[in-house]
Image 1 (cartoon, rainbow, N blue to C red):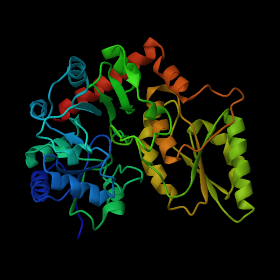
Image 2 (cartoon, rainbow, N blue to C red; image 1 turned 90 degrees about the horizontal axis):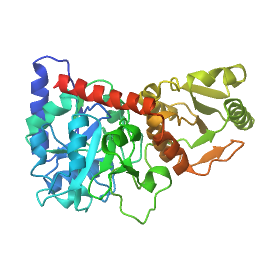
Image 3 (cartoon, rainbow, N blue to C red; image 1 turned 180 degrees about the vertical axis):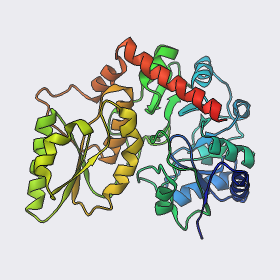
Image 4 (cartoon, rainbow, N blue to C red; image 1 turned 45 degrees about the vertical axis):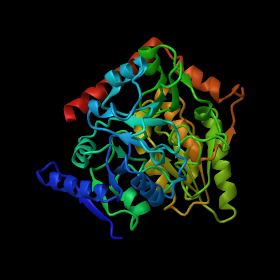
Length: 396
């Protein structure tokens, strides 16, 4: 199958692209499209065969649920049995935007879309191109990220083409994704809203809105492979480059010394290693790195949105560099840091070297400390999320 790339340019020609993509979807073929988070691979979410085609194109296990994307609030009504008060608050605050909400599904939603579950994940993206495609298709769009299963999620059309060339008919090129991490997922089907995947909208903003919010243990540690995933990204290894990745935690200078030592050991065997670092720690490496250690700065740790935006592109780039191993610093500051570390832990298959003099009591404690940040920090991230939602509304 030939895979075509159609680039959006804001002209009237965009409507032709959306109509073409919608026709492919009506014929049962998935197409790739941009959102504000990452690129999605979309098909008719109410057609079991379309959902099976999405799983096949990605090489994705069929028990890994898909997210239904809608363009209008009213479109959710036939899909869910009820809208709990917590869900209504979340929709009012963060839709359209990077938040997925899990509801109890109606019979209209096939189990092939939900991974066999009685619940359905629903999101209303703020990206105008995503909304235009959904409206053109006339159905909820079931869409995981548009990458081969297990690979880093795509944040530009070229990433999609690298993974899915020949597997899908069309990629809608809307440029780079603004956020670069998948949406936050919140389950509202239980007595307490629960985060199943961290994302741009952090725990402080959610607790500010809802009060008590819990966090699923799979967010904090290695998931139980025997348990069916309740949401995308919970069970299987995700976001992973082909080159082995190890996370290194600890004081900046000590961590840099450890990574440089590992690079020297690899160089003695004729191998080259890489390191994902932040801008603030570069001076600890630059004098000694030489050719043996490829330094890839992700941005400033004081601007986690910068790190999030470039993370998946950096993970993909690693496989082009002929490296034997890659080491990554940890980025746990602030609510968005929790989302970044969730992706990095899964990309590294939970391989972590901790050089801290005082070993932490556990990942859950670290997440709790992040969640219980000051009211000032919570306000900042809540305002950011609110600003993002308003921007999405302005974009249509």
